[in-house]
Length: 566
Image 1 (tube, rainbow, N blue to C red):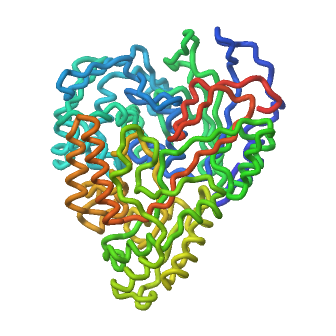
Image 2: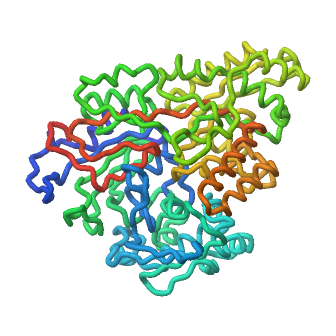
Image 3: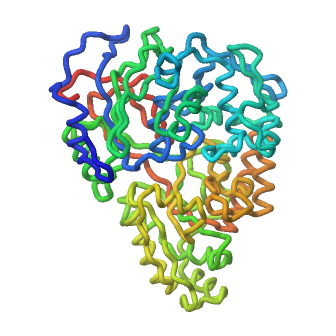
């Protein structure tokens, strides 16, 4: 039981979920390859969810959960993030690269839910996929995903601009029959299949949206390996194995192996780590700051690490003073010693973002074309004086707004505040808010300086740079801006980014994106801080749970050896 406005302690929540079943019961059923069926995978997310509806799902935590409930035409392999079939068993691309034809699997069923007349999930049809893609191109308060298909799919822009309902078709999306879907592009797009793996392209039944309305964000219905059994917002969610799931393993054995997945929502990372060490959680993602001792190799659990395809940065409101002046923006950026932040605050579990927004490790990207950014307090003070704020005189008080969850966000902000005050004479106040309130204020353009983070939706530089593309911010500053929260607009950057989007030759496309990023580093609508190193602790009985740079999770093939904890 939970009470409005109160969170039950994490271990209490886990005990209530587990019940009185005692240790993990012996399990006899195995797949042909010897993998056990059964068991409950337990994880905690420190950020309270804002939505689980694909078109308004914006958090990494929500993605990790939603990926077990929903599916798209394709998905990513968690080993290497390559594209593999999803709801589409196959696809064909015409020689021009402009037309994609997908053949859907037979017998895929939506989860049982009360949005259906008899409570039983019905079979998936190509029209369901087409309608979900059309909704991306439809104006709606719950749709944050138009940027995915904007300028890319034939007729997408016209449909969105017209205000047409989702029931009216987009010219470039057609359904020849119940198992066939065709999508026409405006130009060849090398990363299109990866975009189709994005959560915005996940498929849900129209009945769910019609029945639940705005509550669809809390009542997810998909085709994935798990369906929601119970959801106590802010406390816990339990998902159970979907017995009619279409997937099988390499031996033809039915998936998933697990009986259930449970999530808790405890913001205190120390309590999360305690629960893991007590055996109540299967995994811990991101350690509390100062707890690298938990990574010891003799601990009896797996320590997994990967270079994250992510960026942590401070956004700057480029439409309001003093950050409408590029000299002030650069001065603030040069006054923060990011290496010191990584070494002294983050225990070295990050890489300094000294070459812009794009994380290192993306094959074929010419990072050397992007100008660097390094700690230079002398130049920072010179620029601030040139802008009319010598020694910080006349500079308004700046509130550095951060959310209260995550890997050291508050401690990093406090250290950055001290650096800005020491090096520039600026008056900076760190304002700490709950995550939902923080991001609402950011999207509404209220803070001048704020903490922002991005984990890529697909492993490509374009996905980082889309955060600063002018067409991804409304012209009207009174309207919320989700993707381009800095509201950055620059003719040269936008031109290079758009040209890269129309370029199919890989090396030239990468060169154009690097030139766009170099221009971004000249404008500096943000202060790049660091790229995280992903760290996970995984219980020894959890098997086939690979780590990757996106922290993309596919629990279909995770299995558990019998053990003393449930």
